[in-house]
Structure formats: structure tokens, C-alpha cells
Image 1 (cartoon, helix red, strand yellow):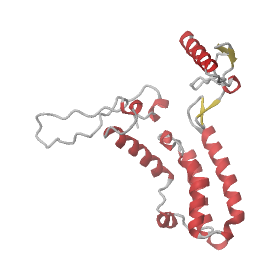
Image 2 (cartoon, one colour):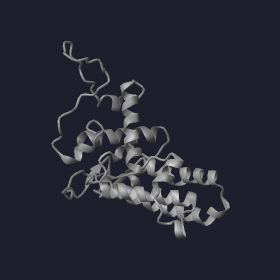
Image 3 (cartoon, helix red, strand yellow):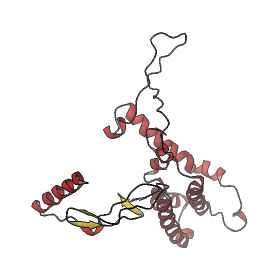
Image 4 (tube, helix red, strand yellow):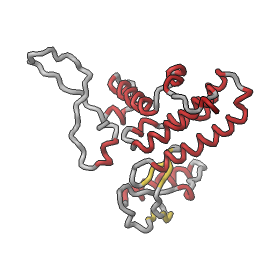
Amino acid sequence: MQAIDLCCSEVKKWMATNFLKLNEDKTEFIEIGPYVSPIKSLRIAGTELKPVDKAKNLGFLFDHQMNLDAQINAVSQVCYMNQRDLTKIGSKLSHDLKVQMVHSNILCFVDYCNSVYGKLSEKNIQKLQKIQNNAVRFIFGLYGKKKNEAVLPYLKKLHFLPIRYRIRYKICLLVFKCVNNIGPNYLKDLLILRQTRRRSSRMDDDFFLLKIPNRPNFSRSEGAFSYI
């Protein structure tokens, strides 16, 4: 904690030197674990902080149990609110414009940081899938007698991947960039290429297979980028 306190003090000092102000009211700390934090308060850089159940970083909500329930609930709230507003003007929009509005007002929130959803629970995946299904019904006007029609054929028409596969696609894209040295270094360091055998009875020339890491000790770690 002394190192963190020193680092925050230096950041605060640098910002003051450059005529900037650190917003101490928005500074939060969260302790990751299945239990309630035993720390009642913490003083860093002269500011007293109390532990919170969820904290936001770059617009993404993390909770202390790392089940991402708070983030999924926040995404659902924003998407349903935007979809309700779109429904009011849906009759005035063309098909192509509806697709654009869904991308810019609904799917952008669903896809934001979705590579973190690698080990998302089935319950939360269904919540996001329901949002996407409602967006497809809005585009094609599947209301009234068409309300119970299957959504999958319309997803194919729009070339929309279901939520589960959108998450896998984003993770695979990040892995591809890391393997081809166009990804960020902090992600490339988490991946280790498998060493090929010099002598083998079978052809072993796939140099882009990844080494399978050992199983983590904690179930929460299974959602890490290096294990998915």
C-alpha cells in the first residue's frame, strides 16, 4: 500500500504542476473476492477511500465478485431505454436507417469490451441475447402476429452473429492480432506459442498454435485472457 500511496501522490503532484486537478470525488477502490472486504477505509494521497461493491473503469463496471452482473444490468438499462425511444419513430424510418440506428444506439453498448465476457454466465448471455432479439424485431417490425416468429432467420439476413459468437469472435480477433504482432504488448505477453517438435512421426509445422496454460487455482481466473 505504501507504493500505491507514493504513486498516487506523485500523480497528484504532477497534475498540480501542469495546472490540472485530480478528481478525488471519483476515486474509488474495490477489493476483488467472494467475501465482503474487511478493510473499512483506506487513505491514499491524503484522500480517505471506502471500499465499494462496484467500480467503473473506462465506462466498464467491475464488481467485487467479478461476475459482471452490474455491467450487464447497466447495459440492459441503456439499451432498453434507447430501444423504447427508437420504437416511437420506427414507423418513419426506412429499413437501412433502422439498421444504422440499432448499430449506433444498441449494439455499440452490447459489443463494448465484450472480450471481457469470455466466461460470462448463461443467465447474463441470455440477457444480452434478448436485447439483440428485440432489436431485430424492431428492424423487421415483428410485432402482433409476428411476435412469436423465430429470430434466427432474421439474424442471418442482417449478418448479425448471436451474442455468444460475437464474444468469441472478438477474443479470436485479439488473439490473431497478438500472434501477428499487431496487438498491444500487455496482451501479447499473456500468450505463449507452442514449441513444435523437431522429430515427430506426423507433420508438425503449425507454428501459430498456443501453449495451453495450467488450470488456474481460482474459478474467477478462468475468464482471464490467457486462459480462454
